[in-house]
Image (cartoon, rainbow, N blue to C red; front, side, top):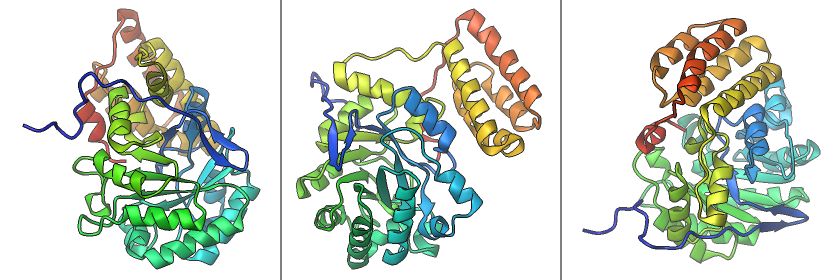
Length: 358
């Protein structure tokens, strides 16, 4: 039998990370990056992940037209914190993308990231943006060039392998991106038609790496430290981007970076520390969004933090039905404190993490 796609190579040294210099004074010291995830990587989550040691965090995807209109929700989504800061834009009109990029830089972005990877129907079909741009290389090139010309900060690109397995054109788009002035690529090892099903193909990412000398980040199915090392080995990438693996684990990018630096696995924070992080996150969401929306939006995060703990299903179900902050805080205490006293640890399988839709 051949080696399974994601099985670790035996006795292979752990790949080491090096800083990525994007130019114009922007350096990613530890290229272990928190992926942009709509409805997940809002400012409170990014702020927490950065404080816990993530090398770079990327904003939620923001539509270029919404950035230009600067509506209230978009302004909140585009708030940035820390250096370097990266703001991701999506769109299909080069003029609008250029203007949105200028606004992003005015709002403090050190990096503008362009989304050619979003697979959802509303974006890729309804707006002809995200992964739809991989089907029109000429338009993709014009959009990249317009964005690069518009700003004096590095512009990066996130994409998939292609629209489907009959059009795996990421290597060619990598060359187009290089010519347009893009400074770094991230490739999710799936096609648009796969959405988040199947298995990310880290080996295919190596063909994108071979197509250009741009720094390359591997993305997809990285939920353990060993996954990160294997993704780097198979892809030849210069760093990794982590999405679902960070659900309920904002400390995970820092743990991956340490493993790739030293070969040693860091123990997860004990349950008391995890509870403190959850409460910091919860407070941050209430402050950022306001009490009612913050309470509602925080529910999924509380569910992810508690996943893998005894009694978590009942706890999650109760939290989902609770509509006031003091009661939620009391529920968190009532759930976590007995587990902490018993020295409980969280157990969650790799498959259960990957089962969560990004």
